Image (tube, rainbow, N blue to C red):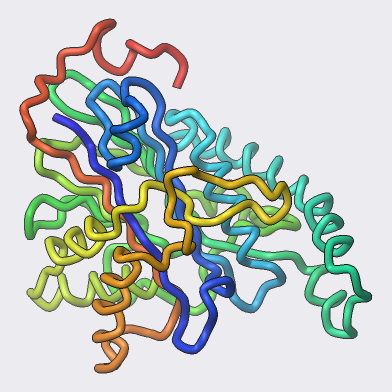
Length: 317
């Protein structure tokens, strides 16, 4: 049994791709060779972390904040996603570092700030997220997930929904979700804003991660007796990209040498555009940035036998 990871994102109607405040990233450790990573396929001797973040469009600099957030989440040990206090500490550290990143941004502008910018910047950026970590265990995979706000994870089995996290019904989506902020982190809510859950995967199962607009649509379909889980997995699988499709604006370093040089504008993004574009035309989905990622657990002959035995074979994770 092995795991295939693919995803893509698209901007609001009329926006440029550089204005898309959604971000996604994944990190693979262990077993897989370089060519397998290029193909988006990893063996059952690996651990996987994947995260989606949705930057709050009315906050200041949501795009780089969402990118920083997904990178930080994927750098954490899998067990941190099941420990709200540990995750909260990591998010506070990221938030504490935002002023330095902001200074770099302002310096890089090469011009004075206009009259509106200082007010926006002093309130900092915000973003929602969902993150999942996957560990191999005898006979399958164990996943742990954490979320703040309304990005969602769906554990699907064919046309059936096994788990919906952190929201389960369309009416649970609102206008003011909890946010992780570049200043003041989780605010007064603190660690209580962090939701966690876990589950066990079988061969053939899929984890879908989606930002709020697409997640809400998917739950509307499911509650109406029209599950779209297979279709969403197909759209994500068409993406082909294996990780973060852009560069870090502060370091200038390319995030992943195998990613789409067009920043998500390849055939995978086209598949998402066709799918979401049709939904927008009928008014079935809100005009918002959209991200969709699929982590598919393939029944392809791998036995699950690993040197060292199960999740402990790689030590600290």
